[in-house]
Amino acid sequence: MAPITDDVVSNLKDQVHKLEARIWELEQRLESGSSKQSKADSMRLILMGPPGAGKSPTTSGTQAPRIKDKYCICHLATGDMLRAQVAKKTALGREAKKIMDQGGLVSDDIMINMIKSELETNRECANGFILDGFPRTVAQAEGLDKMLESEQKPLKHAIELQIDDGLLVSRITGRLVHPASGRSYHKVFNPPKEAMKDDITGEPLIQRTDDNAETLKKRLGTYHQQTTPVVGYYKTKGIWAGIDASQDPEHVWKSILGVFGDSKGASGSSILNKIGLTR
Image 1 (cartoon, helix red, strand yellow):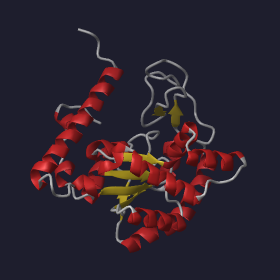
Image 2: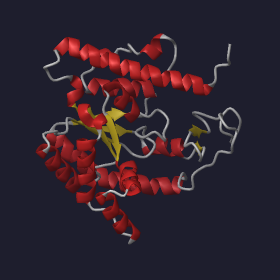
Image 3: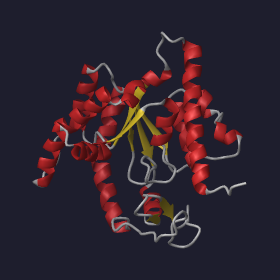
Image 4: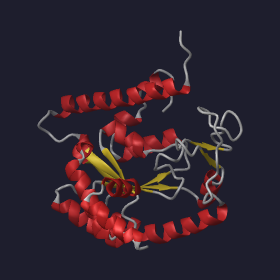
């Protein structure tokens, strides 16, 4: 029998995630009928949170990919989306590159049109979407709402992952990264098997230059200054929900499912849990 490696386990987990998403979709069709709106149709949300709170794939305990897999929706991380448009040399990408090459900031209109383009052309967005990294200002939130209303795809949820700044500093200043793959570790919470070496390749790990307390505190200050008004905006819209991101990832996940009213999902019916594998 061939040895079971971390890659094999990771591939199995990916397959299980896809199976769970498909099972969930079929269950929704049985419960509501194919002609009725499914829960996935309501999965139009933004995910907010400071660096290290667990939004993106570079942090441990990430939540956006889990939402994406469970509900078969697209995850639009605006930084990745911008780089992809530039790489593809689309009209919007060329316009954005010209601005960035001149040292300018890409306009809100360009970012919103990029999101609109993804919603219209990305098949993964048919059932809904997660926006990650946008909007960052009230003006952006208003522009986004106007576009989504015109597309008849208004936001349903604005979820904020909340965590104490001091805990975030301890999380991020201990982060280690394998540059080639992007795999991340943590000196305390998720250490590599061998100090400062990637578990898979054995290659050296690095600590990013901006993963230091002084830089992080500045980033957090900017984040709070920008995000507080945006949170207030979505509170007035009645779609905001705050989640305690200092909990372990499974409790954060269940809290997010609770926001969606997905009590079945929150009850821990995951195939992975049943066979003794964590996500």
